[in-house]
Image 1: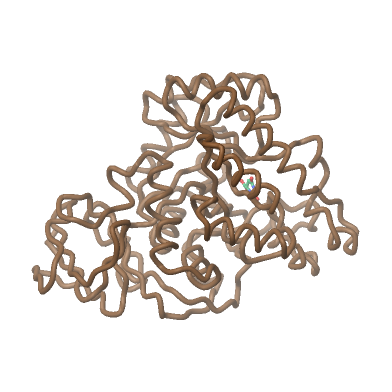
Image 2 (image 1 turned 180 degrees about the vertical axis):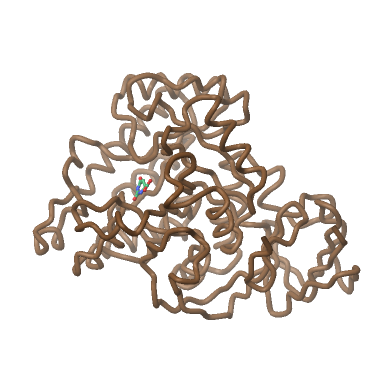
Length: 424
Ligand code: DOR
């Protein structure tokens, strides 16, 4: 690989902003400063040069659901979205709950267009009955465990998982949903579920599990990461827990700060997601939580689904929406935050939560791993589902104009995206 210089941009990382060129040689940043040169020049005029984004929550669907996504197509979508690392969720078929499947996904990840961190299930088969062999999987490099798609319902088992994970220095991530309370609900329970005649699930189905897990974190001292929080009540619970010093982190998705349950009015299942789209008040609270740092990260919950499944009636279609290629632009367009704060939410804070901040999330300085993204914050574009790299098409943002476009992405020193085009 020939050395290159990313030239004419403004470097933004956790240490601040400065005009600087960045020289990359091999897999490292070898110089950062003014007026630098190298055999190849990559233009960053008018752009921000930042550490690559890190997604704590992506469904890459391998093994078992390759008609929706593969590690290759999902990682291409990620690279185009500015990500250099994603945490792959374990609700595959079979679930990622044993060494063989962890190794299989890790192996697929080696050839991917971003780093793939494998999350494993907390319980065998994500069935909520018996703990997965966490120590064995941790020895393979798994740092984050979750039954995502479902929450762990059994309180005693969750307590044991926390005690076990705490002792091993691992992070448990929870999909907060009380099954009994949510049962049968296909959207948020409220004004729109009544109007549409669809069964709803109340905000409390999420909040009850947030409450329980915060209580368990207090009891066990274990670190807990709360996934895709969607309600004002959840944000308030996390705010109080953090003020009380509990070891909790939390994420929110772009769809939960850009869309409400009113989007379901046409019964279009592209707006069906779990947790469901909520009220204006919830959207405002999620945005405030992100702005105040009560919520640590924007995570995509990228959930590709095959077209024939999303074409089913609303109540039968699977929940989930694409996220990797639109997340940064949605955050830049809708959060009304300075770009360094958006990048904190999408790069360095999630990198620390995933335990990969030795090589992702910056800072952009000599000697660091060259995992970078170059973003034109002013470029506006229209989301066209046909042009997405994901194998699936279930974006709820078709036709929406967004500002902020990823121009280049560098993975371990390789230019995997140049001028908005994937290089492999
Ligand atoms: O909407 C969702 N889709 N929520 C989840 O928790 C799982 C995900 C999926 O895997 O499709």
